[in-house]
Length: 483
Image 1 (cartoon, rainbow, N blue to C red):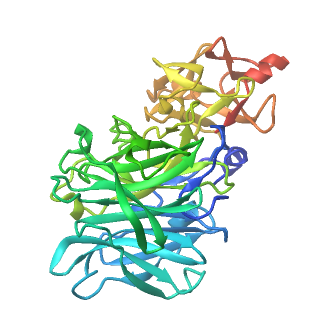
Image 2: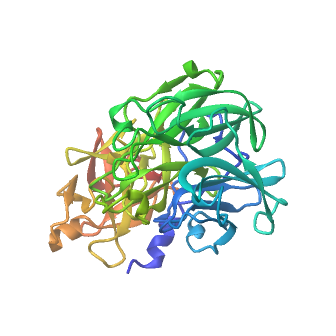
């Protein structure tokens, strides 16, 4: 086992996440900047799809999701995101025995609006299970766990067609509803719409169509745009959505608008022509999507919440497969202020990035197997590593690649490389380090070689090497901050 005393040092730099923003979308208008590292262990919840996690002003995270039986709405709360894994689960509503709201209870979201909680969800009829429409529940008070829940009825749109995945956010003092619906007379399964709200269960004005599935990656199996979610950062409104069938082809797309634009004008939005989050064979994560956003326990970082499966092949209808799991990972931001989703990380402890103390914004990364230090690494996973129990044991740690699991940073003489573990004693010693407080800054970390004591991972001329750290310059070059 990995001794707790060695994890304690890492934990000093790994803090979790909380929302200074109000309910609805995660909001802020700050330049893209570093935020402290977080440490979670995935999955957060087995057999919970379409996850929605919100940090409330009472200090709790609230979590709801689709259950495999499609028959009820559940709620958990905990002081931390990881705590949701073991939090007591309460059923707050069950499907009707027949008629409306009696089948396919899907994709609940929970939002706190004007002193009460509201749950938005989709449901079908007992006599027509795929006649899916959107509905709203209202709490009797401000305590979601001590409330009774009233049905506010159907969330009506101008067209009586397949509709689901309602979400809401506030921007510039206006509350909006975003959702997925089948456009009347159009041969697609669902498109993304937006409208103003005049109450938590009604919309006003004419909805605007923001996105319809036309691109090849949006139309595999089914022509789907669904599961919209909003995060507002860096002077822009980012709207994620999910596309294609709910198997390994499921993936996430992105719409972007200026924060000063008219969000009801489709021309305000730009659609990314490639997906931003997709299945990954190397990490064994398939069909990532139907996301939401929350914030870390310290309120300084953004967290991506989503579901996926740990295997590609599904027998029968993917909707009958119960094993979509709730997962979380840190959302990073590019230098230009746009989100960088990276890849769905492996199960287990989430990875970090390592920023140079003396060159902020420059990160340890691998390129053609050589370990380097580069700025603006848009191929995010190249710069993400997990601190794992050291391959050499004896209280050491190793740095495992995120996009090449089983590959570790190791020294070959004085050079740092990313190589696969060949199970040799020499490799495991070369790939093991003692985690130290930062040689130039105790808020950072340094990595001392196990088999060459006194030598540290250092950068020089853009490359990583193993060298002594005796001078002030060398100590600075051997110090990194976890992000």
